[in-house]
Amino acid sequence: MKSDTADLIEVFSSIQGEGDLIGRRQVFIRFRGCNLDCDYCDTNAVDFDHCRFELTPGRQDFQQMANPVSMPKVIELLERWQRGWPGVHHSISLTGGEPLLQVDAIHTWLPELKGILPVHLETNGVLHIALFKIVNDLDYISMDIKLPSSSGESGLWDHHHAFLETAAATEVSVKTVVNCATEEWEIERAARMIATVNDNIPLIIQPETSPDDTIKLSQLRLIEFQDLASGILADVRIIPQTHRFIGLL
Ligand code: SF4
Image 1 (spheres, rainbow, N blue to C red):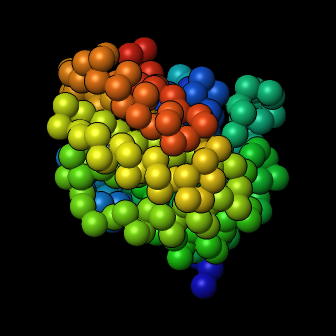
Image 2 (cartoon, protein in one colour; image 1 turned 180 degrees about the vertical axis):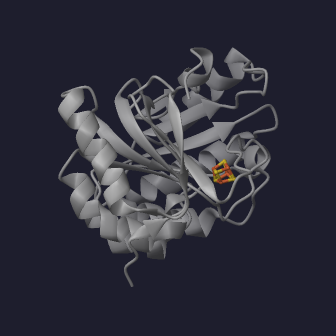
Image 3 (cartoon, rainbow, N blue to C red; image 1 turned 30 degrees about the vertical axis):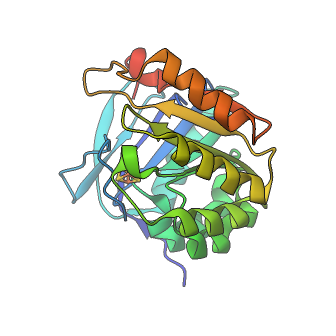
């Protein structure tokens, strides 16, 4: 099934603050809605009837738009940015919420989006059947492994494993958020699960950012987690949510 429209929260230009593409300038298309309810979620959307489009890349001069949004409206904005600011953007990030909840719209939009820039999917790494429909049209995937201690979500291990097996068809990295409650067995289980697919897939350990933009987890704990995972995987990095520290969206 194909759909031309999607419920969005916002379309804007910023610097990727997390994960494997950190520091890259991206166009973010933030989809509304999520299938999970993580304790640390910072995606708040209260106005379901509207989203907002940034008019000038990175200037936060937003214009309100009605939901659902049709593909030509998004394409028109992206093409205008490509003409006016050539070479600025590295890629388009499909983010959320959980973008794969609206996979039919993404499936319809992808050929046009890919004609403008490479496409990066940021996902909670659970909806593997939806991913299967579009994986061959994606250039990058950043997926989460939700640890019970930090997310409050449990029972997702098998979903994450099936998702990673599908995602491995393209350039994929895994991010996992850790906090003061995170235990060694969770890091080890996540690393071993990744290794069963490919032990060269990057694992990014992200310390949870508090609402006041500080990190409560000690540096020593982060180092211990990296030591543990590095005994199983070839590429383990510690990266905080950098956009929060420089006040970007
Ligand atoms: S998966 Fe992401 S958007 Fe969904 S509840 Fe968790 S942190 Fe929020």
